[in-house]
Length: 369
Image 1 (cartoon, rainbow, N blue to C red):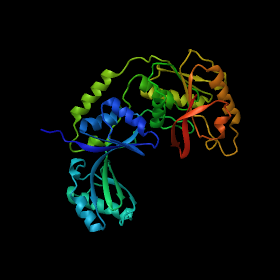
Image 2 (cartoon, rainbow, N blue to C red):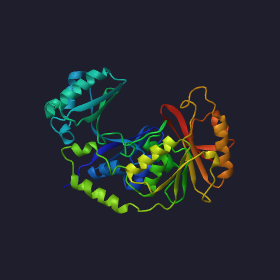
Image 3 (cartoon, rainbow, N blue to C red):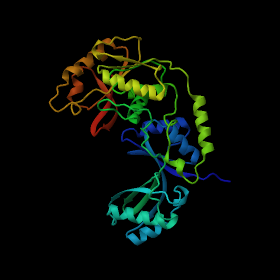
Image 4 (cartoon, rainbow, N blue to C red):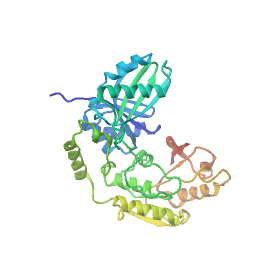
């Protein structure tokens, strides 16, 4: 019996597409096409499950259900009704339909969603409004072509399940992991997170260093599909557990001058079972001294919008430059910051590894040259 293959699309934060494609290749999943905001590939259920389980920088993973051409609503209804909805949606499952339309005669997104919902009802029957399970469906109309995608992930993939406490302006887990991968971090050398907040950089570094699958503790939308294979999922979890390391080679240190942030980080470490894997310190980064000859320093410092328009940050960035350039001159150094005058206050030369958006602010992952 020939294995059924599907077309998939991995959604990433713009700027992280090639990082995600490299992750896929390392998993043995061949990227077919890299576009802004994601990566396309084909495969079976095993590849879909693996991608959800292992990809650290991905936001969500979609199944391309089909494409239809329609210039009026009756045609759209007829053609959507022919799609194989039953392969991915159980009868009665409520659907959340999200629509975008560009350059098409059908541009009323609410009406498009209603037609899609009616076509699903024709195929699968009416929705059970009392069901807690909701299947997300993404409709994209472009030049009168309607592309239909089914979400396989459920909650956004940055929700690893460990963040129970937050500090100010937390960095999404997927962005933190992607930045670490962009710095070629693999856990073999020490890592210092100088402004740890709730511990996201440090925790994601530990997951990488331990080779722990980021999705092993959570549920996914595909687990509610008619053709879900629990045996295959258990097999992949067992293999992931077998590959996991018991210790971290390079020490991970996380520092913050706010006791509440350290308390939040400690709570998150306890939640994910990494209490003994990361060294937490409450103190000022200006007083740090290297405990090891080399390693990677990384941080997500404040950059104006997160402190208020009138806050002066030049002194902070001057101190960052001293720590990066003098005290830790033998270490690699990276930070997240807008490419503006603030970075010049460090007095150091940085090169851009990634450009992306964090909390609606255009920033870059900058590496010390």
